[in-house]
Image (cartoon, rainbow, N blue to C red; front, side, top):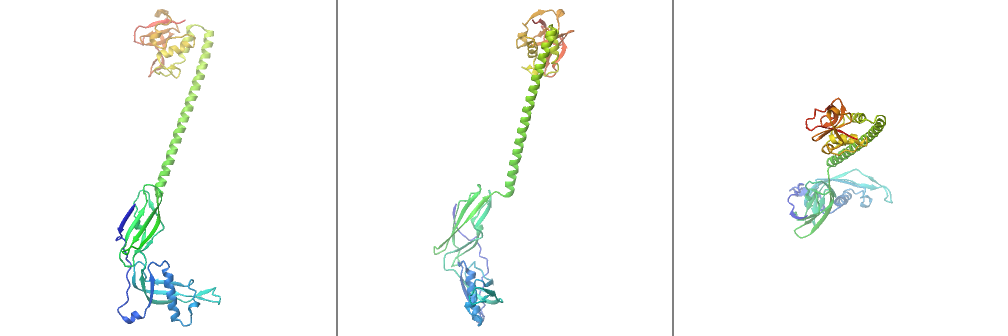
Length: 370
């Protein structure tokens, strides 16, 4: 982003200090001069104050002063603008204590009033608040927020050219460059880093959401695994039960080869679920049930109840025996004696015992299988 602006929004609010109208008072003040663009302006002012101190103190020579160790404080000085200012200077000179000038000792503070002329002979002065600023993710960014001081030698406001590649919608580190141009065309350019990052609370919320999602996914995976293990265990149990039932049937057939074995085996499934299209102990429909039971005894029946109506030899109801197949229009069961049969009735009742006359489909037939 490149923008140009006259920086009227940056106010130079420090007060301007001037001398009193009294000429005598004016002449009594030491006059110092510093440049507004001097990076070491306070050191420059300190050296001038040391010169004044030496002139007023005949017992001390300038070579006796350790300028680097001396301390200075100034009240009333502003480097935000040019002009004449009245200030109060407190200098605590450091005096060398040996001929080699290797050690020095601070002396009692010397205080004076002075007139300081702040000048600007160079390019515009631009001072940043920070070399790096942090901007919240998806917030607003303004280059002017990081400018602490902006001035020119004429006192007029410069034109600002600002260039940056800051994208507040993408986390990262960017560069902002500010160029101040005065009325003579002189330029001063400064740059600083802009770090776009999410606030700590946003990062924390995202981390918590990610952790919650991971926990939910792990819980779902564990539940699915448990369901699969339960299904596998149930299948194993049903397989074991089927194997045991087959062994029982084999034993019953060997001991009692009559239809009673078929009837007894069929009764062992009472209470099983009714499942449309089912043909195993996990769920039967009517023809799937009769087919499954007779298959255990080596008899092959058609899969549908209509197909089973043509199986075996038809006998009268009076001659019905346990183990006979009973069919109706679209239904089938196995006769167990005393006018009753066991059959996969419906989803509500499952495999159950009922009278052969409870089924009202019509066309009841008794089939002797084998």
